[in-house]
Length: 78
Image (cartoon, rainbow, N blue to C red; front, side, top):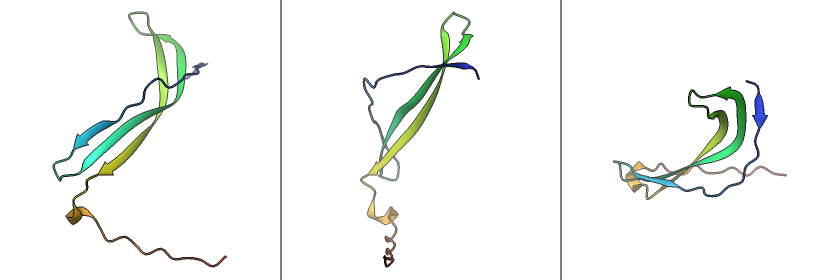
């Protein structure tokens, strides 16, 4: 879609924190990567924007019974 790239600065990026039924705490944050203003408008006259985002996910407090044994890393000679 045709539009104009709009620069931006971060004012606030906060985590959403969820407690899952299995006991895990999950933190999720949406990070804005790009913004484009289209040459189109909503019915109330506001410009329409398309955004590019990335989801950042962290898990905390994972119950031990849900974890798998870590895989051993193989070291390759240089």
